[in-house]
Every structure is written in structure tokens, then in C-alpha cells.
Amino acid sequence: MPATALEFAFSPIQDLHRHRTRQIHNLFPASAGRTQRPADAYCLAHHALEGAECAARAGDATTFEWYQAHPDANGAVLATPSAVGPRIVLSPNPGSMSRSSISDTAFYVLGPEPALASAEELALTAAAYDVASQNGFGGLLADHAVVTCLLRRKTLDDTLVSWAITRLPGTIYTDHVDDPVVLARDQVHEAGHNWLNDALTSTGCKLSEKDTFHSPWRNSQRPAFGFLHACWAFPLTMIYTARVLDQTEGAVHRFLARYLDQQRRLLAATTTDHPTALGLILHSGLRQQLRTVYSAALTL
Image (cartoon, rainbow, N blue to C red; front, side):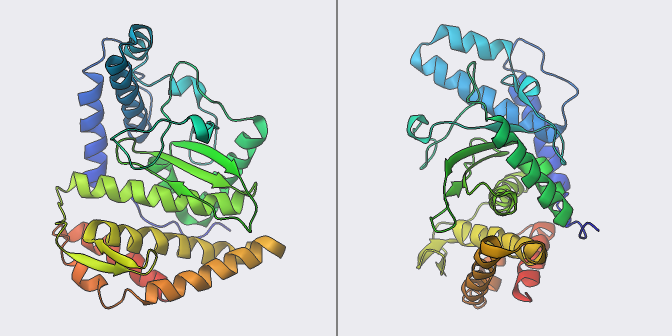
């Protein structure tokens, strides 16, 4: 039986998706697909905007015109079915991904020649979406993991790296170990970051850089923005891992059990600072959402 779904619907985010998508589409002469879900359209519109801007800055008229004709970056054509709706799965070469002032990390933008995933990678990612959905995270991935970029294939002994960037909401970049349960964990983590970025933007919450808190994940002082992001995204993965653990065995089971034990220790080190950091969130609904997930993770 599927686990109880966690609640990720947040009306300010839904309003942001609709409003921002309209703003971006107004910049393009072609008509965007009207049948896309608001979260999908929001994600793909940002890819088209970023791609068009990069092409314009480079003086690449051909690529710029392509984006003008494809305000959804052709995402509707590229999408593949999944448990949470049509998803786009890419497999870009990490060494050829873009770097610029918009992000501290490399990123990949949908374009005229997308780095499509293989059939095996599509199956892996579809299975990961299914695992996440069966364990209560379907709503999160439906709205905040529209595009998954699979990067390096690794082993469970390697460090798995994943990230998201604010300029391309709904998109995640992640290494993988060819196991859907582990991939789903990292999708949940990065989708959580995307959710919180949208939540902060949609509620107009601006966090001062002056307020810093010790982050046990980085063993350093971090601004409230980074600290609260960690105290949201890691608890989400803890809840996911606790739910899925009994469904695994062997090396994957041991890997996830170690991960959960590690996260328990790290989260426990934030209990003194978290209430103070949370008090900087002035929107009561957002503050309560963050508190609920954090408190649930502490009980695991």
C-alpha cells in the first residue's frame, strides 16, 4: 500500500508558477502549449528564457530564433510518462555543461539538440519517480522535478553529487548508482530545494546575510538561507529513507541505513539554532511547513 502522501501544495507557489510563466511567455512570439500543467510550463519557460538569453548574448541568431519558436524549449515533445506525469530525462556530459555568473555550479539548458537519456536511463528514472510517489513524495516531484539531468554513473562507495539552481526551477542535476531507490532519494532532496526557493520567492521572504548559523553538513557558519535549506531538504530525505528502508536489501539497504543514521546525528546538532532561524520566516504558513517536516525528521 502506498505511504501517506506528504502535503506540498502551497498556494503562493502555485500563483507564482502561473504569473511568472505568463510573464516569460509574453516575451515569445510563438504560442506555448496550453495543455501543460502550470508547474511543467513554469519549468520549461525558464529553460527557454535562459537559452534565448544565452543565444542573444552570444550573437547566435539561429538558436535564438529556435527558442522564439519553442517557448517550452520543445519539452512537451521530449517528455516521457512517469508516475507523477510527463517528465524530461536528460543525460548531458558533465564536462561540457555551461558555467556562468548565474550559478556557482554547472548547468544544462534544453535546446535544439538535447542530450537525451538512453532507454535504460529513462527506465531507471521512471522507476525512481514511481518509488518516490509510492512513498508519499509524488506531489513534490510532480511540481519541482520536471527535468532530471543524470550525470555520472557511480557506485555506492562513491560520493554522489547533486544540485539545483534558482535560475532553472523544476530542474535537478544528479549523479546516480543505477538504483531507482537511491536516485529517488536525491530527486527528493533537490526537488525540496526547488520547492523552498519557490516558497521564499512567492511569499516575498528575504533572509538577511547577517544572520548565520552553524551547519553540521558543511561544518561551517552559513547564512539563514543556506541553513534553512539544509534543515528542510535533508529532513525530507530522512523521511523518504525511513519509509523506503524496509523495501530494500543488501548493499542498498546498508547504504541507506548508514545515511539515515548519519543524518540523525547531523540534524540533532541543529536543534538549538533552528527555532531562531525559523523565526526569520515571516510567512506563518511557510514557517509551519518547515517546522512540521523538521520535527517529523527529528522523531525518526
